Length: 264
Length: 264
Image (tube, rainbow over all chains, first blue to last red; front, side, top):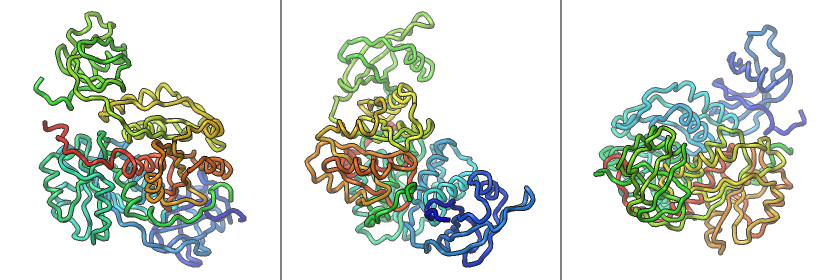
């Protein structure tokens, strides 16, 4: 009980959070809690749901039968829910291992929505969305985020363009054609009036020239170049997200001094 | 012969390159050339060695016996060797799969040297350096780099600090303690006089406070914060490299219009 809150296990749940509320975990989460985190009765843990901040909770009693779900009791609030950057990643799906890696990293980098897009050169058109959502949830738990990004069902590029949200700035990773250096482009984006943005990256092999033309026709869209080397699809997405956070997102806020995770 | 040079296979070799010079490939490279790239007699390919730019070459004749190495003949220069960013990544080794991934990505992101460092909390103290060098070589071939980063033998953190190269700016990924937002820190680094830099990142669990103190005692060192979320070791390294390239490296150069890789 004397350990610091940031060392306590953290779980994302769907239920409402609040003083004295109870949560019944899923069987998977119960297994994780009891056999991976090895939580015992009365030990503190943390819950978040993307809406009500982060709460301290305990498991008052371990489940009596082996297959029973664990029940948790919420005690006190630890952190208030706060506004997080509203940044989409619209990316063509890639092979399983690098796609899972990309979702994990994009979650740590603070993306709010991942919208897979199907383009002419997209080789991978099928993936396990639920598994990617689980990976995003685990990455959110471990990265101390107060939210879990939404991994959406794939959408044809045309559909995305046709229904583009008016206030979202399209930032296109452009490995060919005309483009501005990413830092210069993001600085100009910052000066604009759009409150939200989307990084748009293509599949291995890139967008077709006509796809790039259609994307570029979105109002105020910016074509950003990530240097002279050819980047893999996942590298380009993660690099663009990092640069956006550094120049336009919550990485530019004055950094608070933070305790070492293992020494307090 | 009518295809564009940027679609030709690319190989890194150790030999000197120049007009009419011959190169004898290793058995591994011969296999790659004949059975993965499926190159046939007279088809163009590209060679680079990190010193003499990029050259067009052909295989005048396929090896007559199955285990013979392929011989290549250099024809014309395609690109001159040019100065590339001089950026080190000093990072604690991590588990095999994410470490390999990190080396691949760091190569695409234009790192010049990867210096593994052993810190107090480094769990992984042993790795196959030669395999990582091969991964870096393949990533360099595919990313159109004119050089291959050097993957060094691991060094204790103390040794690194003791022999720190005087003109190299230490940029420390600081997940705890005092730090400046990375974009702000890199802007001030850019204004300084140090021509070269090193990104320094810790293991899972981070640096010990006393390790951070010793790193921070390096002259002009900067402690950089990568936002409010906890990043994995590999994510932090790749994000910091991306931000450095965007703000201080060759990503800030005016982008040239570039042809689509698959349409010319």
